[in-house]
Image 1 (cartoon, rainbow, N blue to C red):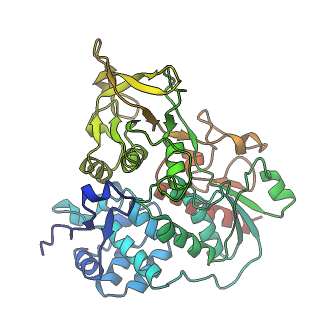
Image 2 (image 1 turned 90 degrees about the vertical axis):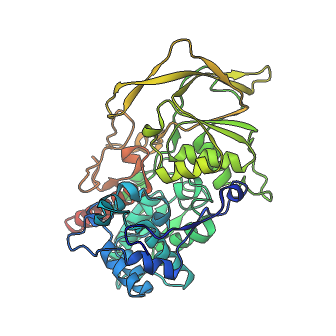
Image 3 (image 1 turned 135 degrees about the horizontal axis):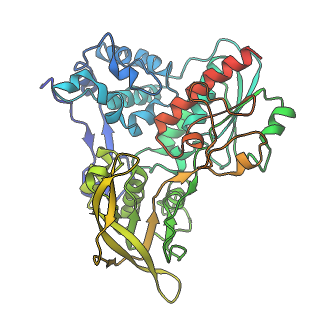
Length: 461
């Protein structure tokens, strides 16, 4: 064993997995996990913990893996994270915990994410549940949204003894974990539902098909239903578009809609009659993880797929691992390319996409070099379906029906970084509803912060 290199993780062959929706990464077995755990230096001043948005005791759980105490490793993680099997699969560890791993200075960092996944999967497969709170204080807290922010906030509050109810607008709990991330990255029945059951085992109640702002307002929850505090973790589900000609044509999807039809409504399964036009020649516009998810989903639904992105590969915001998997599966990247018009046939359907070549100029506000059009470089991509993956913003329904709740110019709820408190007393918020579209783990971090803030608020009320 080369101590400086990660233990390789098993994956489906690219040619095989491009034809199915089974999970791509197969994870470590017990021997592989122990071998990888032994690469950890068990740092006293662990930088990996400081880089984790939910502050998991990483050296602590890895130490238990080294000794073969997999159940105890699960309890160590469970003190900080309600969704370890999810995080082990979809967190950007390379820019967080693994990015600060001391082993990574001279070699490859420890595979913290894969070890977290192993522990969570072991717990699930062996029926190990999180420890329930010893007592309840009987005080009611409402959580809006059952995505990563809401589940984390609810789980932490339940551990503190609060009576927590989650209100979910859709018919199934999980938020972006069920409608946004594809099955081949995050299995729904095997992983997501089991993690949600773990949160419910702490005493958390979940009510689905409740649209806050229509079914009931936040004021009604607090004044009539007896909830002393509310956490808004409703995410950012409103898609953005480019505003170019032809964008309203049939065959143009937002990535949100395309993925929801596949993931939540099971369009990828032959035994579900879900309306979707998978397309034969698909262009996905954007370069983030959601763009990769949409492109890989379209591929599995039988399309030839292009990813169209206006910057170079170095500027792609998607995880390196996701870009690598996408390329392995044969998806074509049209980089330094920007759409200018979607071409429409006489029946109103997409029949092509006019694009222009770009080059990189000076850095913009984000520090990335701004793309600049190259005059006279226009060309047409032959496509019948276009998926726009340009980010999302919060739905304004909650903010427009809640008096005294401040939002910013991006329609995001304004909340304290330290406590999650909003401008309305007793109402807290976190995750994508506050920041705009971000990562699962950052939403979880915001949920933890708000749980602490709610606890302090109610203790002093």
